[in-house]
Figure 1 (cartoon, helix red, strand yellow):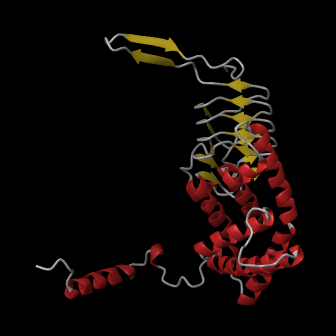
Figure 2: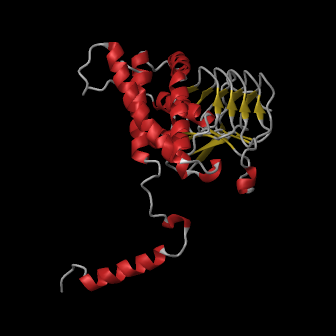
Length: 319
């Protein structure tokens, strides 16, 4: 008997699926031509990197040695594709009300023009993020290594670009941008978060920063940190409300810490120890740690030895 599926069986499966597609589900939409293109948005992010880091992400297809001409080609290309995606997003998302095609074209052009005017300010932030990474990591041999190899600088750069579009009330596109960075780095930063200058993510991976989080200047966080909501059981009723913590200036948050709640404020100059779980505010100049755990060792003759794990006095202050 042949292992190949019979034509009649294929016809039966097709009929089954077509019937199900008429069930009125939200996932049934077939007209996807005017939806934002996820792959195109990723390409736009990569091309924007040429403007943020021109010496690191050059387009090898253009044999242009005149910097002015090279930038002009890059800007024109990104502007065209970004405007098309923004225009689709304005049509795709019904939250902004009904807009005519002419209105969407004018608005998408305005948004892109303002966005490009913000690029020098974005690059100023990225420069300070880069210096913070170099200053904060003795393992970094040079600034170039951080740009080329560190996931944190990619995640924060894409966030800063997406944040500008978020502030311009562009639907969908900013989230597609930061989710691209999330898939590449393991760092999940919502484009709506507010993050101050000289922000450093060390190692990355497993970091979550929610939409309404507010982070001050000179903040350093390690892998596995969550700056999240205390509860989302309210669903859409919570939309637009402050659900995520405020982290003030000069705070360090070590690996695995969870800081939750819109009313939670971590005061300036504080240090949050690894694996802590915080749902209330912490005063400034405070060091927080978990109660000292115990390590247990079993020897080859089945004797058990326990000892208290004492964090360095340079790190933590118990509260």
